[in-house]
Image (cartoon, rainbow, N blue to C red; front, side, top):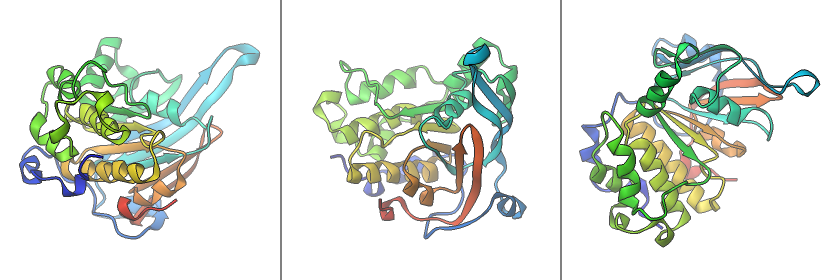
Amino acid sequence: MGKNPATATNTANLDSHATEAGPAAASTPRAASTSHAADAASSPAPYLQVRDLCKHYGEGEARATVLHDVTTTVSKGEICVLLGPSGSGKSTFLNLVGGLEAADSGSINVGGTELTSLTSKQLGEYRRDKLGFVFQFYNLVPDLTIRENIEVTAHLSANPLPIDDLLHSLGLYEHRAKFPRQVSGGQQQRCAIGRALVKNPGLLLCDEPTGALDYQTSKEILELMENVNRDYGCTVVIVTHNDAIRHMAHRVLRLRDGKLAEGTANVERMAARDLTW
């Protein structure tokens, strides 16, 4: 197992590359309504704004509504946890925000960019320059080292982060010359996070990032997400089945049958290391 990111050395080196800090650090959870949080004078500016979002699959009698009139806002620098059972529309929501699929109606605005008006080429540039993706399965290139898997993305990025600093932050520096098969599942997921983060994205989209990991490794990955949010100031959206993860979030959304059933803000949060399930 790699070094826990909370104790990673070289944190000072990362500060010069971090963007504007996100909301306050975690403690113990206490929820408030989204509208109450929005009324606060110190509320961060919106970064992700979704309005009346709809998505259907199929035609005629086979037509199925996956998302129906979803409207929500995630502020800059927040960790947002999106919950819901299988088939509720979570992954579809992430794909739409990530520009991997097109909405049937509604609007998606990310950092001032309206996705629904972009051409295919512009969507590619949006995914390349503004987004980082982390999935349940690591999708690393098996014949490249840990460092090389991250370098591949860095070479395609306009403003990449220094790779050595990032490897230290991820607890992977000592494993940088190893191949994916030579490290643990948790270390492979850290590499996948590094590959997404090296682009210095404004938005990090994570689809079940702990789904293939054991309990302790899952907590370490969630703590890494917490550190990424704090140190780099990027907005993080985590899709998960695990209800306990909600307590580390600034904002909690829940989908049910394609509709937004819950939208709350945690005024006080729980640190990832203190989560239990």
